Image (cartoon, rainbow, N blue to C red; front, side, top):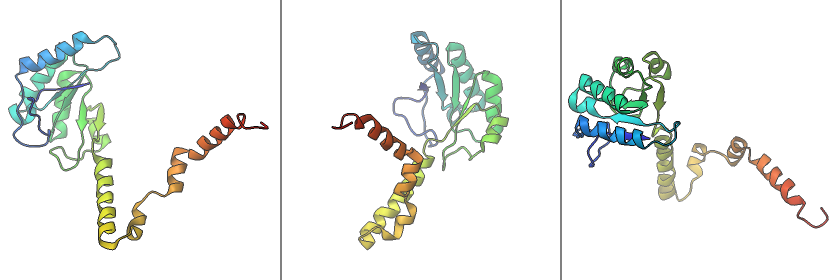
Length: 186
């Protein structure tokens, strides 16, 4: 579970004018979640937007306080340099997450670069959606302008490709096997 330190009127982490709650309030949020945990495999991740509001050292100090309160992982938002991830990782001593979202504050670091900066995991929250959305827009524009989708069929996944990917034919064979015994003469 991610618990954030932004105020209720949350903004995208890569947008300006974010406001965060006090460090004490954020620590209380983490402590409450950690204290309420009934399953030891349930992970509490503290997300902080403090870098943009208070600077790097304050964000690291806030993250350390969250770890002390029970956070298992840290999500420092809108990091702009690999060295910043390394400083977070060295300070908090728990796994950290990198939010690698296109068109934001964080450069599109490679997984190898992130690993060298001691980032434990990377989040790509909108990459596939953005690509799919751009393709869908082209399809709808073609339908409106041309009255058909013939000019954009090459953007689409074929039925055979989808079925191969899903192994759909094996599913159908399993259905045939399961329900064959219910047919007369089986």
